[in-house]
Length: 431
Ligand code: EPU
Image 1 (tube, rainbow, N blue to C red):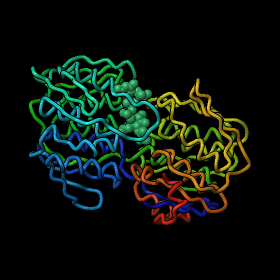
Image 2: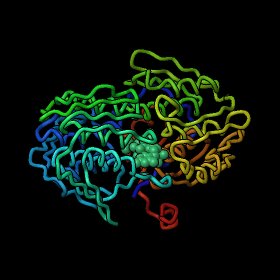
Image 3: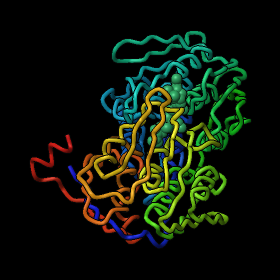
Image 4: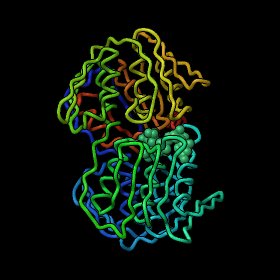
């Protein structure tokens, strides 16, 4: 086990390249099951959720070879359905894409329950409802979700009661090889939904409307292999934008799609940071003096829930009282205790799922832990803001979704090291 040791107090300066989007790469990797042949994926991020996905698919018979640092070839011709390893599947959330992909290719699926970051109940009822609408008969027990489509997978109209990225993509996966036309109403509009549709269309699928709330999928007989480059990660880009402002630094963030960053850019400008957008980069600078604000997390194109925790250390040093209302994951507040250890003044109104952040003069170093992926980066930003040494434990959560974080931050002038945990009292903290 390792920890991060950060000597904070240095404004971040320089430029950094954003990696490919975790939440696009993962479904695209599972979507390759539908191809039943070889695909070349470019811009694949080297993060642990991707490594776990490769382990799952290799265990099912896929052949995955690295071409270079960010390119892989994945051949799913001999992949056998219903054989995924339950322990591996339970390590991550996106393994639920096996449901749609297996059902689409084999007419049946048998998959353990997904895991992932713990911020309260994370139901999959929309996924089940959508797959049932396509002819899947779903049985669940305490260990597995089993789906059979005895009459084959058939296109149908699917309406989601709420907006779900995962359910939208899962139905899309099940529908591309189905007989007939599927429509998804109240679909998620996130850029990663569009990227998965673009990948599938490059393989011969007929999907239109991705990026709007109505997606139409005309089933095709079969898909073919392709070469596809995954889009840059807007959440990683947004995280660096916040870190630049929070440390009073000046960063050029390369390899971004500016359109995806509008909500975060608007919020940073509103509180007093300076944001300049270019064709495929963004420059953010801050002077350490910020105004309070109100943020409500929303599905795309609203302010993303996956940037909520990272905003909190920044708002902790703003003038006045800021509020962040979480509408996607109402229990996503486990970072609060850790930031309190660093001097932040945060209370949570559980009834309205709102963090109330009262500005303080400064934060201070502490021994803290990453309680989940984005919460982990929130304490990392706090550590970079403080004068003195912070230790962060349980960094495996950060490594699920951020690539090369030590190298990237070091390149921006941060003093950060990853070191093995050796002493016992520290191990207690990590537990
Ligand atoms: N929901 C249901 N039933 C369902 C599915 C979702 O009630 O069957 C609810 C959820 O409880 C939540 C809302 O719908 O309140 C949205 O959930 P969604 O399905 O969109 O979330 P997800 O697909 O499980 C993905 C990302 C999350 C990100 C959310 C929202 C992946 C692997 N995960 O999760 O990413 O927060 O969309 O944008 O794509 C992260 O990267 O840190 C992360 C948590």
